[in-house]
Image 1 (cartoon, rainbow, N blue to C red):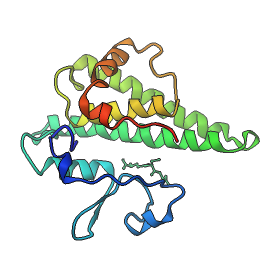
Image 2: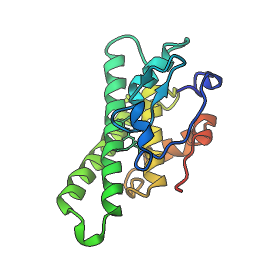
Image 3: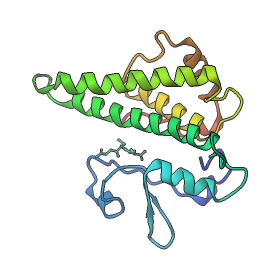
Length: 184
Ligand SMILES: N[C@@H](CCC(=O)N[C@@H](CS)C(=O)NCC(=O)O)C(=O)O
């Protein structure tokens, strides 16, 4: 959001490992990233709230202000964020010893990921996700598709050529390249 709005100079990036570094909990009781710490120490989380705050710093807005566009964009953002939550659970579960895997957890979270991907495909077809604009819904979906790749959560491109083509294009944006994650 900051890069897309040309506001990235206002922010300093600090890398934190949320599962290892308990010091993050002093800022965010949930001990999750992202968390935005303001100059006076106030902390803002989670990603949707941070995006809303950053969007309000300048025009043009990347979160629509008028209904029904606003609720539709924020619902797609919620689906993308939820797909991220499901994906983190899948990745964490895979890290457990194989004998301790809980198939019911895998199955439920994978269904959430698959259904969210199907929703994004529909949204691309009906204009809920734009081929021209790159606003809150497109940002949220694009970063979660990138996460699918980085953590190899799912083979999401299979059977979804339109979503795959769309991601191919948006992944080349400066903001996406600059924030591309690698697994350490
Ligand atoms: N809904 C949150 C999700 C944030 C999230 O789950 N971040 C992960 C990144 S791995 C995390 O910090 N997890 C730590 C944990 O679940 O304890 C957001 O959009 O900010």
